[in-house]
Length: 260
Image (cartoon, rainbow, N blue to C red; front, side, top):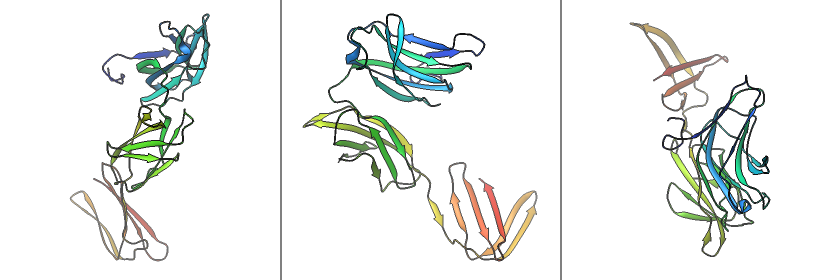
């Protein structure tokens, strides 16, 4: 199914607005020592729930450990169950819908023992421009050293969070991997995020002078003919939008757009 993250099967959590039941709680099979485990999954919504929580079941009652802010695209989430009591019986997922309906999809659920060196959480890419981007994360360990890798290239040591990536190529997709350094030859698993740099902005002349501007139509095709000493060209994503912003004398502004 196209709603799955991988393959065709997935967990679908839905409650219509017409029903009195306003939540879904899905309990995993019973497990021992839940407070030593972590659960990871890929999840998204098509209509957002009021809350999406990971927690545990104890004596038939759900208790939340972590609330996750889902988005409309699949993302990976990891929750550490160390807050669960020793007699917790199972890990559970809860989607609360309130008085309206919601659609939540969960896939690729994995439960494992919490490692001694935990991978960074909440990896975020922000302030993406044509040649730079900012990378930040939440450190679960009390660490002061990390490593990152860009598009499978060299592994780079850093001692700061966040970090600034420079020298990137415009309009290019990148995958950033980050892991924690917990000691000599002791590393966490990689955590990853993908982003795309912005297109270039080419500035030819910030204040062009137009000496002649003619609009014409030939066989139904509109044409713009002009004589100018310069103009600003901005290139956007495909389909290409070529926007000419033309500024003449006496504060007269003409804007012409052509979709290609």
